[in-house]
Image (tube, rainbow, N blue to C red):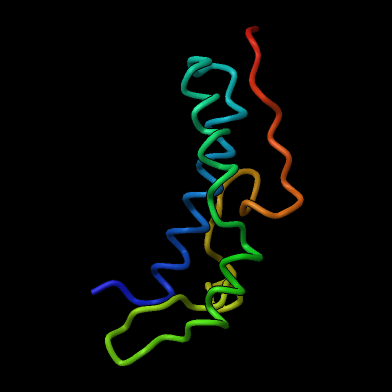
Length: 94
């Protein structure tokens, strides 16, 4: 079973991955644009923290842990977690 910490870490990794794909000019333009579209609707670290506060882990193990509970040595990608302040530019040719 997935723990709340693992679930939160997966969301943080997912947002970071979308940023990396969107900014990697070696990837096809259609893929980079799709990453930007998805990232616009993906939860930010601030939203994940709010969801963790609103729905604490229950006895079934559902819910999210606070991002503060993720071990500090966890690699969250080259650009870090997706944040409310993250602005991904629409990828253009070239």
